[in-house]
Every structure is written in structure tokens, then in C-alpha cells.
Length: 359
Image 1 (cartoon, helix red, strand yellow):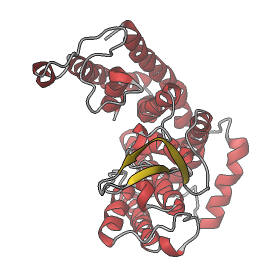
Image 2 (cartoon, one colour):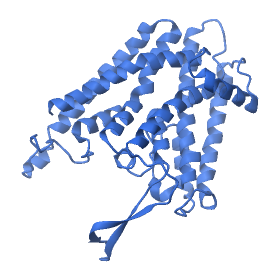
Image 3 (tube, one colour):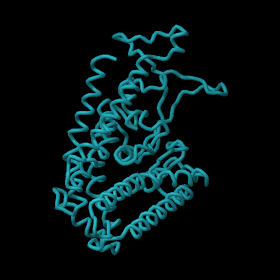
Image 4 (spheres, helix red, strand yellow):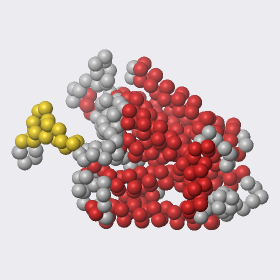
């Protein structure tokens, strides 16, 4: 691995750790009900949501009520995503006229996205309509991540509060996680991704003429290729920030329409660990001892660096099976070297290993 690869890895870690304190401090203020620079704009939105839903933000919950609210909210979301997939053929924003998703796949996807697992057993571009992607999966990318953040904050309050039986209000924590943290970050990341060429459109799929015709499995000549597009950038932003799963396309961020350039790749990798790293400082801030937050982040970073080093070293060393077949895996000016099988060739081994380790 050359010096440029090491610089990329080091730069990633420096930026990540540098952002942990300001974002972590901001999130602590949000969860403790303090004013931030976003409250002037988003404060009225928060209050409107409470009025619309009948939530009294000053009323806190005990752990049982909090847990019931978490499970009830996510159960409703699960059923909604399931139903949306089953009837997508009858709904708008389906330019490719994709049919209803099968019951088993719909249930699997609904459970996966509601639990922030985001495991995919389908190809998004051949299975999901734009509406299902946006109203179902993207919304769950937001609220499932917000649910996890709310539970963490409730846990922190439980650690800090020794004499009271309440740990906050789930609906307040959910709302604040979404509108003050996840939405603004996603908006910025989505703009960056769109500027780099990640697609964001409601147009139907494009047909392009192939420079070199080929033949299909039946021996027929193929001269055109269908290019899947859609509102991807907006979904990829929250996918990376909140869940790191549930991509718009089948191959997720290996797809050039989902991850177009080295800059978009860097922002997507940074988004994976940005909130987890910042939450360490949030913890320290909320318990009244930021040293504890830094200690948590230090332990996580040490483990991450160790695993990243193993991944990079093993992949850069190459595959012994290929060596036995006479494949040249040495690194030169024109050959990246190492085991390039299964790697994103646009970004190389170092970035591929970094992505895999962060994931």
C-alpha cells in the first residue's frame, strides 16, 4: 500500500474525530432542551408537530411507558411499510409500472427497515417504486435511526438520574432526533452527493445505446441498455447517516449512480461513523464528565484502527490462490496490487477496506 492510501485513512480518522465534539455537544443541547442555532428555524416546526399529535413535551415517561411507545411506534411503521409494498402497483410515482412486492419479501423488508437492520433481499431498481423507496424505506431510515438515538438518550438519563423514575418522553426524543439532527445532516449530505453526480430525479429509467453490442443468454443481439435512475441522493444520505443499509440500487454504494466520485465516497464513509462517534461526546456531556465520552471514543477508535489495519494488510497482501495461478498481485505505479476481487476498482483496496470496517 502506497503513502497516498495511508494519507487517505489518516485523513478520514482526523476529520471524524474532529467532528465528534462539535456535533456531540450540539446533540447534547438538543436532547436537554437547550436552544441551538437551528431552533429559530426548526423550533416552530417542533411545536407544530407536538400540537398536531397531541404530545405534551413537558410530560416525561417511566421506562415501561417509554418502552411501550417505542414498540407501538415501530410496529405501526412496520405494518405501513408492508402494506405500501403490497399495493405499490396501484399508487403513483411508479414510472416503470413495477408490480406488488411478494408477501414474504414485503414482510422481510418491513421488519428489516423497522428494526434498523436494513438487510435487503431484493434489487431496489427492479422491485421498488419511487413511492415505496421514499415514503416507506427512506422514512424508516429516518425514524428507525431516531428510535435508536432516543433509546440511547433515555439510557443516559437513567444513568444520570438516581432519584427520579422518569427517563424522558419518547415522542419528544424521536422528534428532536429527526428534525434537529438527522434531517439537517441528511440535507447537507444529499446536496453534496447530488453535486457529485448521484442521481436525484423522478424521471423514468433511461435507455442508452451500447458502444459495443453483445448477446444475451439466448443468443439475441443486445444493442441497448436500460439505466435505472430515481430519487437516490436523498435516500443515500440518511442511509449512510442513520442506518448504513437499505440502498436505492441492488449493489448499494458500489453503484456509480449511488456513489459517483472519490469525494462522494469519502462523505458516505464519514457519514457511517459520524453520529456514533459524536454520541460518545454527547454521553460525556450529559453525564457531566466529558472525559468519559472521550474514553469511550478512544476505545472504539483503537478497536477500529486495529481491525482496519488487519483488513488493509490482508487484502493488500493478495490471495495465495491467485499467486499459485500466476496472477501478478504486486503493487506498481499502474497496478494497485493485492486482492482486487470483490473490490470497488474505482476506489481501491484502502477505501474498500475502510468502508467494510466502518460498516
